Image 1 (cartoon, rainbow, N blue to C red):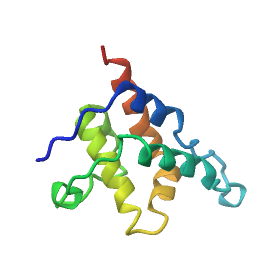
Image 2 (image 1 turned 90 degrees about the vertical axis):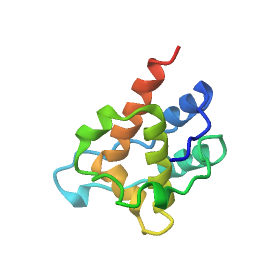
Image 3 (image 1 turned 45 degrees about the vertical axis):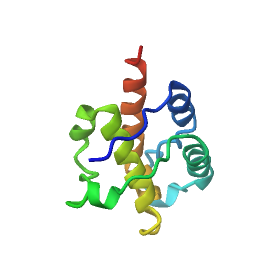
Length: 124
């Protein structure tokens, strides 16, 4: 396993501030409209800070990324595990059309970023 360079508090704060808005809880799918601007703002932030770091995410997650339906795993991730997982999800979007959009719609990305905020609060 490759160790990533520790994230600075400033980077974590920026990434949390630029988190895409949560998917609205509309009963009818026709009432929902995805606004990509929040996702683009988030991606610009992660790519233009030290958040995105090179590592072989495909080898690291050779058994596949954790299920996006099991949110209980997120609560037990360390900062480095969460960092790697977020990078892997962002990289996977290059190969799977609308992958990150689906993570936003499902609330999974919000849950990951909420965990990041919790870990940030615990930093000295």
